Image 1 (cartoon, rainbow, N blue to C red):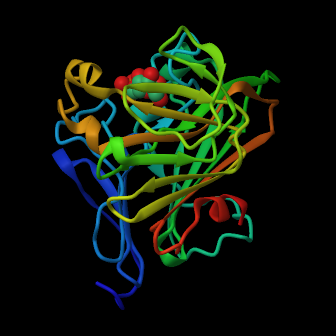
Image 2 (tube, rainbow, N blue to C red; image 1 turned 135 degrees about the horizontal axis):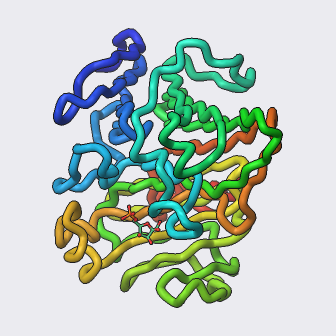
Length: 313
Ligand code: TA6
């Protein structure tokens, strides 16, 4: 409820899994599970859910939760010899009680710090020592910010490289009515065509069939325009040069046990990522990848929000 005190509450979620609920004074909220460091809810101050989570999502570790914002680390998709999308989304994270100071630009008062460190077993899969700190914050106006800080703590002097994505599932009214602005004329790798490289046409992206594309070196802002809901999601990213756009469409939807047959109509993944050029860290070095999501009322006719102005603003 608006006017309530901002709060950060550790409580039980589905199947008794630990989750943290963030609420800001205006009534916006977000939920993040310690399993996977996985954001599963982001609501407006009118309690409207902005993220898609499948009705068939399985909350049973180690299976990743279908929806919300899974974190792909240290490998995006099958770009390497680890399991699909790496292991961070299949691990239990802890609450970081002693995070290093956060860059001064963080205005949010409502946040939680999580941390993931490798166990001895993990070394057999990925022989590196690291500290992955994730801050999930609710900003002014109900924006959602995720900041990842990954540090190489190898004692053997070895560097390591990784690819990364915030695999965000946006909740949308109708995929066939959606437009994505900010990726026009960019090169992309098409995962539906053996990752062949193409160049996107000059107009906003719309959807008539399944898509699985990795856009390379994109602008830092991307707009997802949902006419029916008169809403635009503005995605701002920092340290994440690439962006993945994914919708499984009907056939793939039917093939996924934790995804409803028709749910593809009401979701779109637009993922801030670092894929084309893996990030390499020497011992002691730290990488930061930041995602900021805003949901703003929009309507072409009211001219309240012209995506071009958003992307240029
Ligand atoms: O990000 C797009 C993608 O890599 C697709 O190829 C598709 O596999 C999707 O991720 C979902 O992956 P998941 O492992 O969660 O089923």
